[in-house]
Image (cartoon, rainbow, N blue to C red; front, side):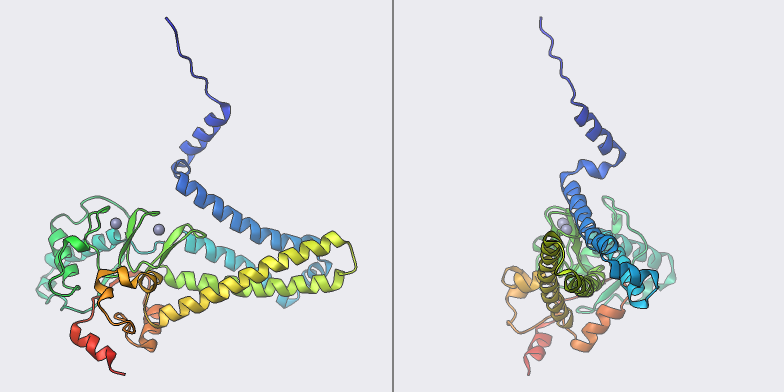
Length: 333
Ligand SMILES: [Zn+2]
Ligand SMILES: [Zn+2]
């Protein structure tokens, strides 16, 4: 008779304990996201740490309470906070929108306001957000109503099957896509951001724009501090100079990338498009038949900007596809 004894590595036990402490650490995808977030925060701390430790001009300025140094430090902290807020924000999950729809339906039924006419075809529907839980069969008896409301947003003849997510088994409103990293359907899906570890969608696109704007300004401002340092210490130790040049090179590349990203997303906002719609236009069933220069969800630059900047992110906006008549109107120069 033989016994098989398995010995457990102490490091495995430690990692198991960590996983028990935080269930999210047991998921490799969430672990790599957490590592990416830590790396990004660390990179910021290295930049500010160098100035605080080695740059006497910076420290003198800070001790004398010069306003521009204090504002720089506050801006630095605000950018880190914005990164963490954006990273932890909800992009707008279809399941949450369905839940809110279900609540609104229940309220309408219990009050006499249920006699209000249903939203007409091609209108935008706004569902107010009041929760962020997840669950199966959240709609109950309202599933049929949700399906009907969503299908009214598509052109006549669109089948329910083509609009149903095969992973979540929910009927997707227009502009929705299933994200395989988040394993959820996202309203107005833009892209899944590996740096933030979350999707960018309807409810956090504005926050994302502000984050890249702040990061871009921070890059310029930090670059100025480093250029000043290089100018003052160019004749001192070579390793110091090499280090600062490498840091400046990373800043220059990041600045260029952020600038292009900012311009690109500003263009998307002004035309009410998403990155996914722009890149995969020929693969999205309801977009591929439309002429190239038609932006079906655009209400004009001013209205698009107003909706993006001023419509509260505590609401879900479900946008209908335009009718063929409206598309013809968009083609008129
Ligand atoms: Zn899905
Ligand atoms: Zn995602």
